[in-house]
Length: 296
Image (cartoon, rainbow, N blue to C red; front, side):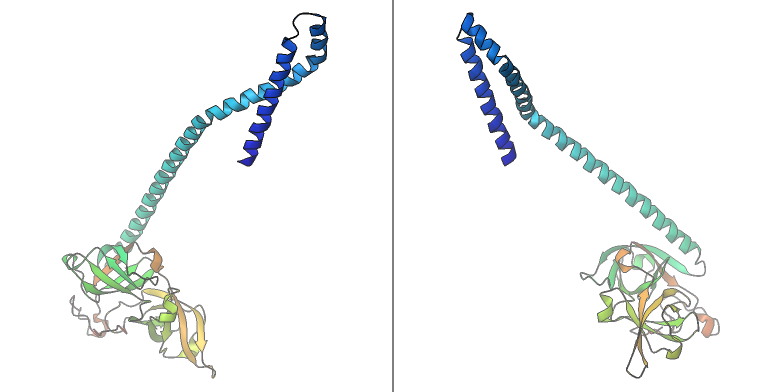
């Protein structure tokens, strides 16, 4: 701003000096003195013209600056509108892709009864340990129904209403699920942990053979207990915590599901858990091994 003020002052002074010189020269009239003055001042006239011309252009530009600012503002609004439309289009494409993936998942689970639902809110904390769905008992959803995505297990329903269901994700400290190592078949329990939940992780405990655990091991549901169907992807081991004697304390589990990006899910309302019960299907609402904190 100070640069612009200095420039205006300099140009104004130059115009005043130039105008004064022209006025002095004009007062001599058409006589020998004027001719001498004209001869002397001719180079100055050119310099004066060189000063006045850009000055005229400068002040003309200043007078039009308001118009330019208005045009710039209009262009910025157009750019914002186009960006918003493009973002909406991208969101629409992403939503269609997710819905297609969910439909493919649903069609691939023909042995299960499922209900698709949308995540409408999170628990007011940064852990993503509890979410709310837009479907409830009117759609056949009940407590302990399993919630999944195309990536794997998200959690289970812990309370319901006619048109809503509250879901505890597997990183919730009150949540646990029976799992097994896909590499060895050893079983254990994946549980929520307060120190890990902030990183959207949980821990593996009570492994039947902790000597077999290695970083990178893949965890799937064990199917024990009748809540979670077997062989649903859960996550992988990213770190092993041991005591001073080298005994396993727990394994840090990175779930397959990104709980901060839950949009649409499938709720399993019925599955045949009769494999260990003389192949008798378990009716909805009468799952075997129904316990308060699921240990599958």
